[in-house]
Length: 278
Image (tube, rainbow, N blue to C red; front, side, top):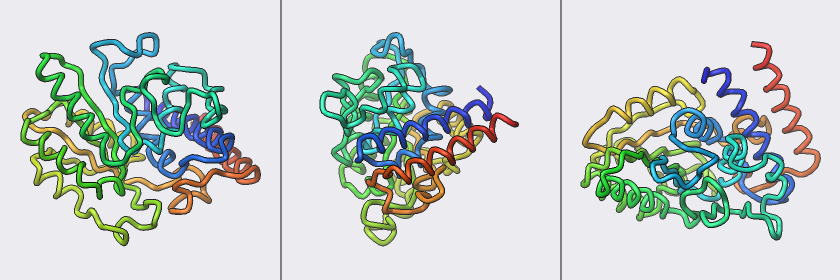
């Protein structure tokens, strides 16, 4: 796919985030929007997945370690064809399969139930180790939050992955700089993130997480790296794509009201139309 095509899909992914959280009157739009470009590239370009066969044995695996940004993952899966886009309107509703956090038993395309912060990387490491032990060539990707990596279990998993040379594992850190309590540097600074992963024997790449060319180059570099897992530190903007949400910690877990929904959807519609003019 071209960068322009990916940008158009990312706009649709962001629309789904707004539709879902507005309909639910709850959820986490900020981090879902910051990770939308990463989700888009993974599912439309990088990963070997098949919506017609979500449990294919040779598929690549994805673990959403920061499980609260499920709206971003769900919207991407819907755009990719795993389930109807219209189902985003049922997010977090009683009886809906689209729960507030990913559920591998009920949601097509979800490889791991997640939400308890810090645990997803361990699950991804286990999947990567299983692939190695079984002689499989699938790859495992996981998305962690920069606030989430304040959790100790993240670094236990990183230590193990580096020690076992799991070069089929890619850890992406959505470094939007904000968590529910504010700036990550003020709450409990994880910086320097890259140096920490390097200390655990990771190959580390720093990128702009909204630049598809940089995302593509980093993932290509990860595939070509042997004997080490890769950590991609993606600098992003929380709330990316919706002007009044960008760079605001308050949008970590706040749903847009009717007026805010209309403004956000209008902005995203205009962004999509502008891309169509290119």
